[in-house]
Structure formats: structure tokens, C-alpha cells
Image (cartoon, rainbow over all chains, first blue to last red; front, top):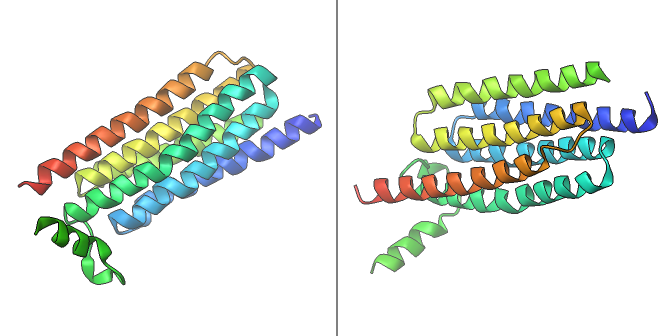
Length: 113
Length: 88
């Protein structure tokens, strides 16, 4: 195995491990909001590591496409996370006694008046 | 190098199975949508690994399109669920 192969192998396996951590969090965590953490952060990091590991092995023109895919994932993950959090709050999936600060309910009440 | 690919595919498959557990068990629709979104990301990662294995970049467009479609689909379904349960 050459140096590039070793780099690619380390990146691929660590990325897959991060994906497993995210999926394990999806199963273990008790709440929709805490599952949201597991679904966005370790998944994004895992996908980025895997894409980097793939880009090491491919030619340069393909690496650009992989970069676009990774960039897209980084941009869309916060949007999804925010939408999910708001939908979970509005549909009552959030246990409000666990929140320290609850600014959204004040805003919602102010908007209804 | 084939051992590396086998390990990576195995880990990704394990992650997909764990996500399927959440899809089956998830008490709310939102949990299931979230798990499906994770599954789409795992599929993108698996396609990329397959591309590295064959050393050809023929699935680049597939990766970008699947990531885009997963994002748009998840957002639209989340909006739908939010509307439906809010006015109930």
C-alpha cells in the first residue's frame, strides 16, 4: 500500500466509525431533539471524512464534484436541524420542563396576539 | 486495500441497520423522517466508497443529486407534518 492508500484507508474507516456513532445515537438517545444532534453532527463529519478519503483515491476532476457534495451537506445540515427543531416544538415533541430558556413560546404567543 | 473497503462497507451497513431500528420504532413521524434523512446520507457515503473501490468517478452526479433530493424531500415532509399537526 502506498502513502495515498494509507491516508485514504484511515479517512474512510474513521468516517464510517463516525457514521456508526451517529446511527447508534439515533437508537440510544431518548428525545427527538437529542436525536437531532446525533443525526446532524456525527453524520456530517462522517460523510466529510469519507468523501475526503474517496477524493484522495480519485482523479482531480472528480474531487471537485465530491467537494460540491460535501459543501452541500455542510450547508443543508443546519437548515434541516433548525426546521426539525421548530417542527418538534410546535407539534409538542419537546418536553418543556427540560428547557432552561424558552424564547420560542414567547415569540409564538406574541405572534398570535 | 480490499480489507479497508470491506470494513468500511460493514460499518456503513451496521449504521444503516441501527437507523432502520429507529425507523421501525420511532414513536413520532418526525423521528422516522429524521432517520430516513440519516439513511440518505449513509447511502451517499456508501456510493462514494463504491466509487473509490472501482477507481472511476462515474457516480459523482448520482451523489450530488441524491444529496439534493434528500434535502428537498426531507424539508417538504417536515413542513407538511408541522402544518398538519399544528391545526389539529
